[in-house]
View (cartoon, helix red, strand yellow):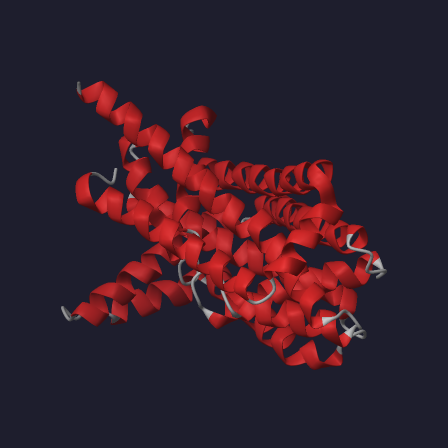
Length: 314
């Protein structure tokens, strides 16, 4: 559990990042963002946030499946709070800050290697789902082929690595040095060994089906935003735009995909005929309703956990 100045530093850094993102975004077209919010309306905003909650809920179910596969039957109420708490640091490179869950799960006797394996499996499953969703626009926007190719290669490499346990064992045996790099690589290989439990055929299908449904829900939210803003585009194209943007953000390794996801989304929308101002407004709106909504939920979950710990100590 984070405590003291470390806890406050996490909360303040997230708040400053969110305010900075919002400030820069609104400076680039705040009037259009306000107009877009008005067009979507209160009911529309609630629908969009509900679809984001569907995304988070399905990913939590997948998380529970991963923990169970490694022999950890953590009750879902505390596990849900811990899972949501990880979202507080989702705006980090590769969402690495979400490994905070590993710290919180220690109270439930979940080793770091196992929680890291679940985290790695999550990222690989998310990447696979997003790559599959980009196939909706494979012929619509040929410029995206290199990005899709890199993403698909990453998924294939990850799955092949996890399926080849003898290779992982041989690599681990060879890394018998005491250097920091050797120790780090051995830990990575040990995580990969544990992640193998999360990629057994039956679980692999279930987990990736949940991932596909989860990211489709947010893509649907993006389609609704475009529809309510008066931009007439097929559902398949909207799904593609959202997926390729998430993929570009993931491959940029920037915190939360910031910059890469937004740049791709604005560029493809403008290519389709949307004005620059409206493209920025739609992008800001969907990112606030997905990425930053998750961050807010994560901060609130952390505050709840922090308060419960303090109450238990008093």
